[in-house]
Length: 132
Image (cartoon, rainbow, N blue to C red; front, side, top):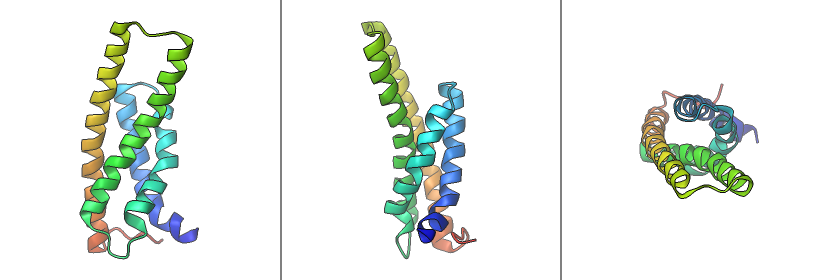
């Protein structure tokens, strides 16, 4: 457990901050995305990057994209299910929400890939120590 925390806490902080900023710009409700990022990023980062002895930048890029997408998709899916069951969307409302979700996911995946690649590169070069 100690190894898990040591190897995932710095990328988790970076992705929570990223999710906080993206959610603030796009949705206004930052906790709706930051909390899933806090919970999901360590798991994604561990599986894709941290448990490897020699992580590569591409591992970080893939993990970054998946972490940001997961942090966006989970709360938006929950919100869609909740609000869809409380107040059914009209076809115009549904199209608008779908367009916004798709745009957020594309931007999030691009930025998450870039951030994950940078962190992965630093890990590969030994400039981003995971133990403190």
